[in-house]
Amino acid sequence: MANRATPKQKKNGRGKGVAFAKWAKIDKAQRNMLVAVCIVSVFLGITLVGGIYFAKVIAFNAKVISEKDKIIANYKTIQSSLNSISAQVSEMSQSERLEAVARTRSTDCTEEIMEGLASENGIEDVELARTCTALRVIPDALPSKLNQEATLASLNQLLNWSNGGAGIESISGADVGVAEMDGDLTVSPIGASFSLSDDASNVRKSLDIVERSIRNFDIVSANISWVDTYDEKGNSTGKQRIELVGLYRAYYANGVKIEKKSKKICADDTSDKCTGRKKK
Image (cartoon, rainbow, N blue to C red; front, side):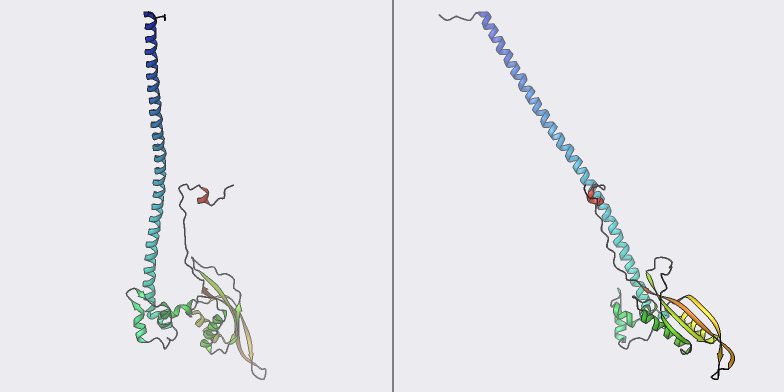
């Protein structure tokens, strides 16, 4: 015959069951709380990381927009400068003062061509304007490249105009070094040495006409001496002539190129990509 549980044992069994049920409910609530805390932590982390990322993106885009504004301002400045230069060139092409000292105009420069050069936007054919308008003075005043022979020929022509070339002894190229110029003029020197032997009046005329030339000739040095003159029989004429040995410095324009600029924008200005440093 099986043993039956006493009332006390039944009571103790029911108590243990209730306790286990409560513990199970507590464990489940703790697990749910832990899961909820984990989920909130994950979302909080994602929000924090996303906030930092978007803040960096906004800061980077602000830097890009700032640099774009600077580029736009530079473009406007360049465009304004180009418009100003175009207006000045158009004005110079019609300058009566330049035309007064310009070389003879080519026979190809017809009236139709002259009228068609200018427009509302300025000179359209610059190459043609260089030979048909007053702008043809500019290459004579300041050549665009080194040409020693042309410089010597120009000086020789000036001296010939002054006194028929009778007093010219020699003309040759020379080294004059680098000229000290004010400002940021992009020019290079061309040296020309010369020797004159004539009376004081002709020598003065020679120096004067070179000084008034449209092309700039700066005298670097001069050595003047007085020499007695003799007739065909070797007798002194009682007159003296001047022997002048001098050195002139002329100029030509250096080539000008368009300067291109680029800028790399980095989120971190100290990064290796932005500074150009190589990783060790």
